[in-house]
Structure formats: C-alpha cells, structure tokens
Length: 273
Image (cartoon, rainbow, N blue to C red; front, side):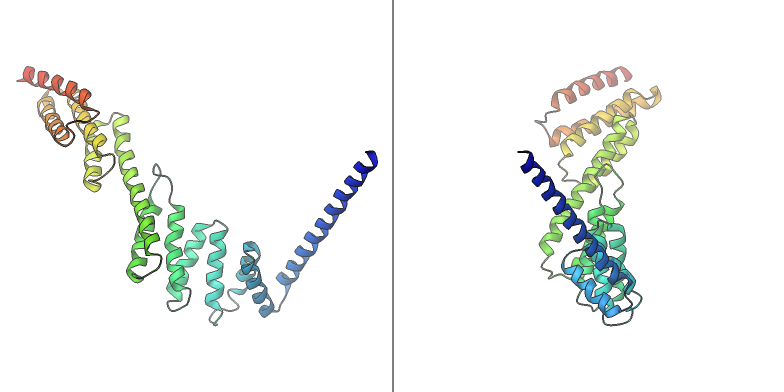
C-alpha cells in the first residue's frame, strides 16, 4: 500500500510537471506572437485565437493591430472582432462603445447589421433590476427600435420583440415600485401623482387593481392628515377615487378595506357639512 501510494504521488507530481511545462510553452508561444514585428503573422494568430474563443489573446493582439491596419480592408474585421472580444469578456460598456463606433464607421461592412444588433444588446445586458435607474433600459429600447426600423426583415425580429417586451415590463415595474415607494414613506400627495402617472403610462399594468386601490387609500390618508381647511375637498377627491376603483374592480380582494375607509370618510364628510 505504501509503494502504491508513493507511485500515485509520483504520478501526480509528474502530471503536474507536464502541465506546468505545457502552460509555460503555451505562454511563451503567445509572448512570441505578442512581441513579433510581423503584423501579418499577428493578424493570422489573432484569427486563430478568435476561432478558439480565446478572448483575452485575440483582443490583446487586435488592440496592437487596430492602428496598423486602419483604413485597410482588414480594418472592419479587426474592429468588429475587438467589439466581440470586449462583449465576451463581459465589458458591455466598452463593447457597446466599440459596436457604436463600428456601425457609424463601416455602414457597408458584412458585420454592420450584427454590430447594430449587438450595440443594442449591450444596453440590454447592462439593464439593471427594476429598483435601480433605468437609463440603460431606455437606451436599449431606443437602440432596438432603430435596429428594427433599419432591418425590418431581420431574422432576429422575434427575438427583438421578446426583448422589447421584457424591457417595457421592467419600465412598468420601475414605475410601479417608484409610485409605491412614495406611499410607503407616507408622502401621500406625491404617491397620488406618481400612481396616476403610472396608470396613465401603463394602463394595462398587471398591478392596475392594486394601484387603483392605493390611489384611493393615499387620497383617503392625505385627507385625514390635512389641515381642516383642505379636508372637505380632499375627502371628496377620495370619494371619487373610491367610485373609480369599485367601478373597475367590484369584486376586488381589497374591497373590505376599501368599504371601511369609504364609510369612515362619508361620516367625516357629514360632520364637515
């Protein structure tokens, strides 16, 4: 058992040594390409690394070659593959910039349509969760809209439509969360404005029933917390919101709570009168 264990350890050590040698030769081979003054050789190797999806190596080489071949027939390939490399390395900001420069520079390249799509797709990949600022989401929608207008028969049309729906849903969710945040912090006046705007922008929202209820509730609480001179008008506004709510959702899950608030505000209105 002891001899077998020693042999096993020697095998592992030998394998590790071979791996280290392989890595060393691999690195030294790339270093040789990197230091070469033969630009055609570098370009050829960059394409080989691209085929192997060795993103770090072909990006490193193409960055060296970008200015060398600028203005030549190889320039669009280098610039497009660079954008691809940045994208696959997860740098969507740099990739998006590179795709944008490409589509503006090479309007007749074989890669132009793909660059247009990927420019929009980088914004999509950078779009954050709904709670955060949605600047990139809006930019993605604008870029995909531009893409479809330029390529109405694109085979990616169905994919773009799916992505656009996803992005619109995210904006809708952002609108809903922002409006509800005002309610949660007790800023009922701002909540009323925000919920109304959200309902106007997204009339078919999946949150519509909940928003209609909280529009009524925010109106009720705003009136209840108002100075006496403003209460009558604000309670009346709350009554209007109640009727709007029940006319759309007469069997709502919020109906019991809504009815209790309505009964209370009607009593208050009678006293005020």
